Length: 171
Ligand SMILES: CC(C)(COP(=O)(O)OP(=O)(O)OC[C@H]1O[C@@H](n2cnc3c(N)ncnc32)[C@H](O)[C@@H]1OP(=O)(O)O)[C@@H](O)C(=O)NCCC(=O)NCCS
Image (cartoon, rainbow, N blue to C red; front, side, top):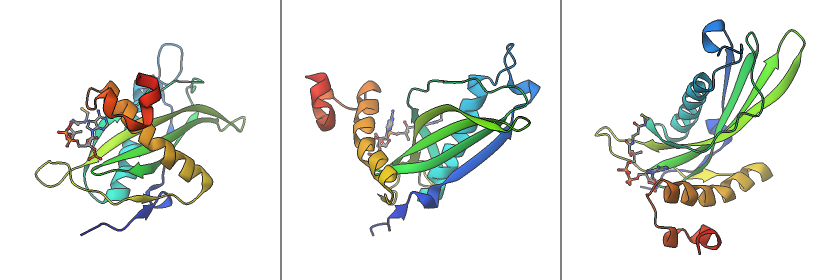
């Protein structure tokens, strides 16, 4: 039976953390690995909300840290599903730092994580399609097929000649 489509809003997750001394590097900034851990959890929750099943992280696209997040600042992570394929879902994340004392927010990074829904035997299982609503959701939805093909080619899971959306890059 086909699963009923869900909107991106239904998977929307916001995570807020305070950067404590144990989260920082020797420069007093949030460690990248700690941030990626929080991002993984926020993104997994978005994927689980979409598919209503346990999920595993299949891949993480490149992450560029634009601005360091300082000790004592707040981290805001927003995650939502951009597109669902068969058993996999792409999740888009946006990360901000906030200085709550001086009251300003600054962008840290954006990233795409991919999750696969699993059945009780640990095998990939089908997920509901995603129905984009806003202009931005439609743009992210459209780009998701190109990003999927690129990450599968780079991960050795797809032959470049099968990447229909990327032919111009590889030929
Ligand atoms: C992710 C995983 C379930 C995929 O299993 P698999 O045997 O390759 O399964 P399939 O080839 O049938 O692919 C299943 C889905 O995963 C997707 N997938 C596989 N490798 C991927 C990758 N590197 N990046 C993105 N998606 C990937 C496929 O595109 C497919 O998606 P679709 O069903 O929407 O078309 C499996 O590799 C796994 O369990 N990996 C470890 C996950 C984990 O432990 N993560 C935590 C980090 S330690």
